[in-house]
Each structure stands twice: as C-alpha cells, then as structure tokens.
Length: 261
Image (cartoon, rainbow, N blue to C red; front, side, top):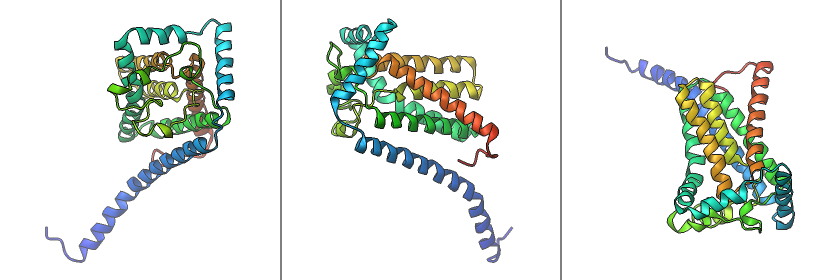
C-alpha cells in the first residue's frame, strides 16, 4: 500500500504520541537520579567533617555492640587481612556489586513492568533516609577508628581501580564521604535486591541467591572495615521501613500506575 503525502504527517504524529509515555517515564527516572545526586552533594557540602564527633558515635556503636556481645568487626576484619584471597575478593565485591547488581535489578524490573514503581520508590526513600543520617550524624567506620581495624580496600588498591579513600575510583577519592558509616546503604541496597526478587515471584533458587547476596554483602562491608554490624542492621531496617511505608501509601493513597512516579 502506497503512503500518501497527507498520511505521512498523521502517522508520524501518532508515532510520537505513542512514544510520549516512554519519554515521560525516562524523564521521571532521570529526575529521581538527579534528586539523589543533589541530596548526596548536600550531605557532602553541609555535613560536618569534624572527625572527633564522628569517632565518638562510632565508639558508642562499638560499646553498644560489646554490651550485646555482637562486636564481630575485629575478628572478621583480622580474618580478611590474614587470608589475602578473601581480602582481594571482598575488595572487588565491595567496589563493584553494590552498583552493578542494584542497577541490573532496576533495569530488569523496568523492562518487566510489574513491581517496578513500588521497588523504585522504596529504594529512593531508603536512600534519602540514609543520606539524611549522613548529613545529621556523621559516623566513622571501623577503618578510621584506632583499635586494630584495617582498611582492606586500601591494602589492595594497587591491584584495583579504587583509591585509598573507600571504593571511589583512583583520583576521585575526595568525592566520597568517609564519615558515612551509619546506616549502611551497601547492606540496605543488597536487602532491597533480595526483597525485590521475592516480590517478583522468581524461582525459589533465585530468591535464595538474593538472600545470600544480602548476607554476603553484610559480611564483606564489616570484614573490609567499612561498617559496623549495627550499620548493616540499620541499613536493613530503613529498607524494610521504606517498603512498608510505600506499600501502605499505595494502598491508601491516590491511584497510581506503573507509568507514574
């Protein structure tokens, strides 16, 4: 069938109209990333860089853990240092999976459609909550507290792309907030992955892998000297509360679809 010159503009207009929902969704996602980045910059700019109060909070956490006999940081950190292969593997794990796995699950959910908006809302809410804590109560990680804790990533920075200032790429270490131990978004995001897989109804073996990923991440962040156990538990808590808040809001709030923010 030959397309007439009059039909071409109509068909083009129809094609553009069909693309509008996709463009709108993409704009929402980009805007949310922008909001998170801006808030992170705020925490970098306005959070106190005074080390003494941050160290004091870290020691308070350690005192609490000792009172409950859950202070596993020193033992686990020593294990990562004594066994070089564990230290190297955990350094790559810490510097890579936190971003790649979370992004991969987000893209998978986006293409799948179902549960995407709920999961993304929970992730954004939990992340903003974590960033608020970084702004209001900077807390030092074990690797910056005297007492025999070692910075495992720094020990292996010569064979990786990360700097000696956390997991930031070499030359960009100054952009990281080193007093952002509590709560652990590494732990929180990994639990988010496990919850998303369970909500999506994937096979049980995949759900088990998601839970194993969250547990492994928690062991890694403690063993590398980047977080206290309480940091990880707090990261899990804000993700669970974020999901609970989002699900409650979606049940009682205004009607929304997977095409909306």
